[in-house]
Amino acid sequence: MESPKYLNLACGDSYVISSSWHNLDFVASSDFVVRANLLDRLPFPDNYFDIVYSSHFIEHIPVNQVCSFLTECFRVLKPRG
Image 1: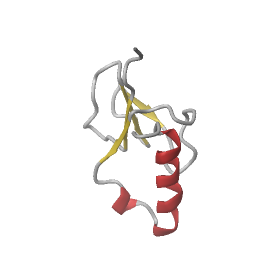
Image 2: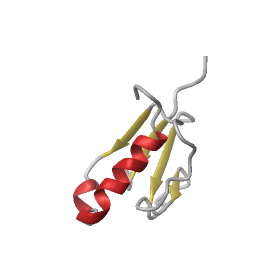
Image 3: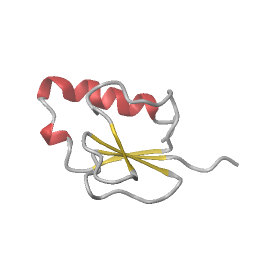
Image 4: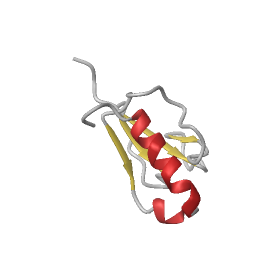
């Protein structure tokens, strides 16, 4: 069975050190965080993650970009994720 894959978006200093977790933020605060513009296309294939997690980020996204951000989250999330 394949190991689960988890995505932590806009993690800041609250990242998870585990081979199962991918931590992304606009500023890489650690070697465990990958720098990415989270309002662009996420750098992963469709249906890749079992869980997509983000906390205290959506309220900072410009209103006209929230829908596209959530669409990207669902794109990389596996069915039933």
